[in-house]
Length: 329
Image (cartoon, rainbow, N blue to C red; front, side, top):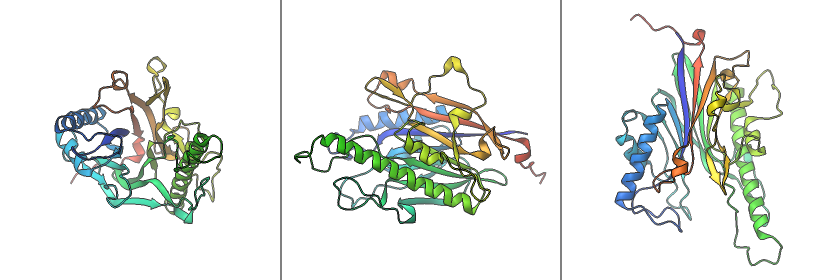
């Protein structure tokens, strides 16, 4: 009997407790605004009906717990995540994961870049040695005898990275600030790629990476995470594949795959990447991505409590020989 797995990614847009000032230029939620927001998020989670969901822009794990309490399908799901560092100069949103499948290994948070990576930014004295937002990893039991390593990420945005240098005499400080953001996003991507290569060299298990990449699939940072141009090393193919592009049931009549709108430009910057084990074109496939769906109607109406990102859902069908038969006991 074939088994379906459903993975989803969802940038909820600034989930914070009422009265909490999460950004300097944002007014905290009132009790009424908070209730409207968590109710809406809960409704979207139930619509997804996914087994594992990666979330971004979580300022409070308690707020996420309040969301799950309002759902019909996730009240008993496991919640994995962490609150932003309260001692930091400013709050930075974190990522989280909710799963209805068993967790085989506790959540691991990667804050520092692996392999002692240190990348220098223009005009900045100290090199970057940590992820813009920590990466979350957990090993999920997708089926009896089948473990999947799941990563949730949120790479640096395209928002210019100003460093109090607008009064400098150098020309085009905005361009330099944009370059810093690009380098930081590339640094996040490189660090994540190292984590993925490391884990694939140790154990041959399927990998799913999902999150807000703040870039399209063809952009260099996204391609870095995927391992573009890499070839099997020591017989291990640790490249990833964009699930939308390898799905086996693509319906061109409803092909409206965008997750973000900026300056009237529709683009997909939220992705679900899978390893060769879920690529239908791979001889090592244990299953295949059969369909990728985008839930984005809310972006047109732009309600205050709704997210400014679309949701992505990937349906994966495991091959019959992958699923162990149920015990008669």
